[in-house]
Length: 184
Image (cartoon, rainbow, N blue to C red; front, side, top):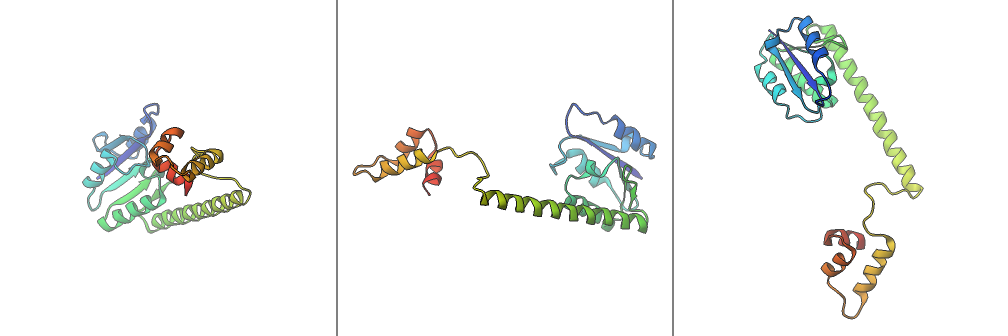
């Protein structure tokens, strides 16, 4: 049995192109599952129903790899699960099919290249962040208290009868936790 899965990320997108491609590939309309959610979430109701229905000898067809999974790790885990269960996988756009040894090899080559590219991107990002820190650039969210406000808070606490941390936090309109972090 052939099953299809289509996914669009937003209401503004249209799944018609995916649905037509799946039907041209021999998937009956009743066997096409469709989600209108981000691929980043793993809790996609139609995908979960589709995965439960797949049995030994079935084929899951998608229009494009990124419609099934956004992360390479998730995609490989799914395809390995399909392999264990005797389910075939086919991606129309990339022309990948795990029904043949050559198709399995192609899938794993694509996966290895994508993983290599991801590793290079991570390495470059880390190097860039390290260089930015060396130049004095601070990453992360904007500080809620300036250096002057932090110094002022320290002076208040250094007084003979210091105000409470709650009072100082209220003075600067921040939470106690934010004040604690700034003083650390």
